[in-house]
Amino acid sequence: MRKLLNCFGNGEFTPEQRRQSLSIPNVIRTLLLFLPFIIVLEAVTVEQLFNVKTIQVKSQSIKNAKTYNGYVQIADDKIYTITLTQDGFIRNLTAPSIYDKVTKGKKLFELYSPEVYKAQIELLSAKRVSRALAKNIETKLKLYDVNERNIEAIKKVNRASKYLPFYSPYSGIVVEKKVTEGSAVKKGMMVYKIADLSTVWVVAKAYEADRAFIQQGQEVEVTLNGDKKVHKAKVDLIHPLVDPVNKTIDFRITLNNSDEKIQPNSYATIKTLNPTQNKLVLPNTAVVTKGAKHLVFIPSEYEGEYKSKMVEAKRVNSNQFEILSGLKDGDVVVNNSLFLLDSDVVINGED
Image (cartoon, rainbow, N blue to C red; front, side, top):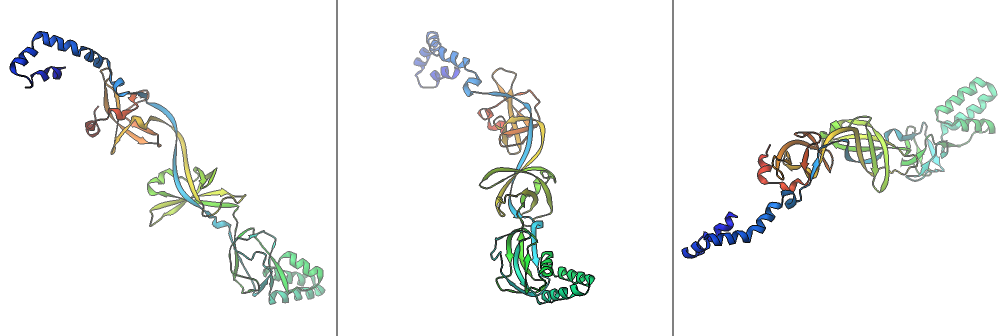
């Protein structure tokens, strides 16, 4: 109001005009003219001007969760290598291609081995001489990985077979093979590598700073790209070494994959779940952050006025801050604090 009156004396009028304008009747008329506006301004509070909303600090149960990225891989203990214990030749492969499925106990190929063929003839001869000798020859055949089923067939038909069926000792898919139809093989040679996908590993990566959040046996939720299903599991291994290039720590989760819908090399998201804790929390709209500082606005001793207060706070999720110190349960703060933000308050704070 004082500024409005002063405008009459700032040099815009002659001294005579100024003297007339500042006469008592003119001042009264001016006051009467601006009185309605003064009354309106006095009636408008800070809450009305800025639509200030308040909220109480409350203690809530918060489940700490962190999210990491990872990938699916074949479990090391579910990869099997099939090697041969004798020289020979292979035919009639039932799994001629990579990723073919094989079943434990089913024929994988037929193998001719001169050593095994010779041992079959020795078995048939020993049967006629001594039961104990025949048992010794049977043991010899088993050392050549001749299946019990083959040995019984040889004794039953009383005839040696040039090619004997080789039955798969494992179930899974072929991930590597070194033979084709008619291949010659050597003793000790790897012919197939079989992977059982009934269980798979998910390997996740976490930065060193998050080491405290990851514990062996900790419950996690795993989701896969393109699949809405949430797989609940536990951390079963934390790798003992830090990745020297990325400076990350790998941790592992084992998932049941009996239906084989989880494919190795798939992208995975892992959410770690820590025990629920009661914490003093505020929505992020009530906390102003400037660098490492956090402040809130609390009611002052004058109605409709607010002052800033520095607090110690830590973000617990995308929507909330945990109040570590500076406020207690039940304290009232401004919820839409950005309306009251002033640059000096951010720099210096106010208690």
